[in-house]
Amino acid sequence: MRDSVRVHKALVDSLGVKKLVAVAGASGGSIQAMEWAALYPEFVERVVHVIGPGFDIHPYVVELINVWILPIMLDRRWNRGDYYGRDEPVDGLAVALTNVTVTTRTFAWAEKTFGYRWADPAKNPADAMFNGLAIEDAIAKAGQARAKTTDANAMIYMAKANQLYRLTDDEVGRMKARILFVPASSDEVFPPELSRRAAQRYRAQGGVAEVAVIDGDGGHLDGVLNVARQGEAIRAFLAR
Image (cartoon, rainbow, N blue to C red; front, side, top):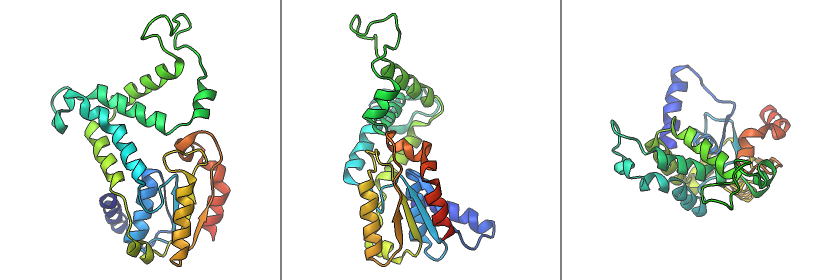
């Protein structure tokens, strides 16, 4: 993540920008936003950290990410990453993307969106092993569709980049940006407690931090699909 931010900084420098009013991002983007403030404390005035982990990745999420990408590595076509010019590990990648979808959503979302409908009204799931429910069918098809436009190694390396994110106390102490943490109430990947904990830590080191929680039952993805629910809080933060 830090390497990506350094590339972004080179672009911003080439454009002649001297200061950023704010750096904002959701999920992995929130990590990059925080890295901006840590790497360039004089350059960044504010951070909007949406559905993020705070200042480091929780150990639970480190292992959760492994669960996400394991199907890719178990696909024989992955070939330890050397699959270019050959058949790509699309089956494993599709399952990996399915894992991400399931774990970034919630019980309430699944019940409200799919309930117990059959995937095919004419095929009772009790009659055959591969007759399924609507949620199984929809998420599997979404994973297969996304796998056609996603590179397996890119997903693995991005996963590793997320797992390595951790700011030291010294790095956090040098930050000068005001921070707005915007977690989602039903997020089970980066729950609001992580944002509250990070805000408390930042204030204890003399920083300015606020927390605005997105209410909803959409899970982690509420920070992408429903961030407007805290639009007023974000606008007010940027204006201060």
